[in-house]
Image (cartoon, rainbow, N blue to C red):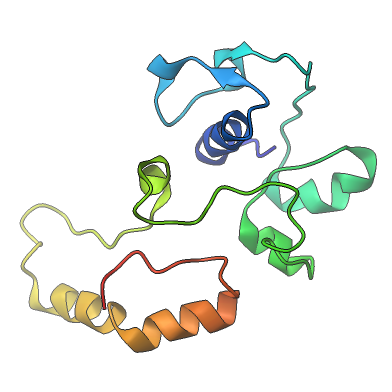
Amino acid sequence: MPNNVTNAGRALKVLQSAGLIKLDPSKGDAPAIKDITQNKHHLKIVQVDPAKIISLLPDFAAGITNSNFVQAAHMNPIKDAIYQVTPKYNDPKNKPWINVIVARKGDENNATYKKVVKAYHTASVAKVMKAQFDGVYTPAFKY
């Protein structure tokens, strides 16, 4: 699984969602390996650079990495996955990992930033996302 804090926490949450481990709920959205409270299957979890996970699969039973790395390896993150979290933006489990456009306090009404948001939150952007990423990334905005 990934060796960086954000993606490692997400990977552990995916393992928990799959019913393979249990995590200390007090650790929130960024648990670490030490926060595993139950590992009935005695999974050996190895952390590596997420870009290398696909190339290491011949030596491991499974791997968890970001969809962009899976696609770069000419695989389909939906069709080739043995497990995946349902990519629904309205599922509370996914909220910590939804990408958002943000601004510093005081810049929230910046006209240029508002134009960027308006341009991004369109049916044409959603259409490109769906076509380009084949359902891997789901628009989390209304259009």
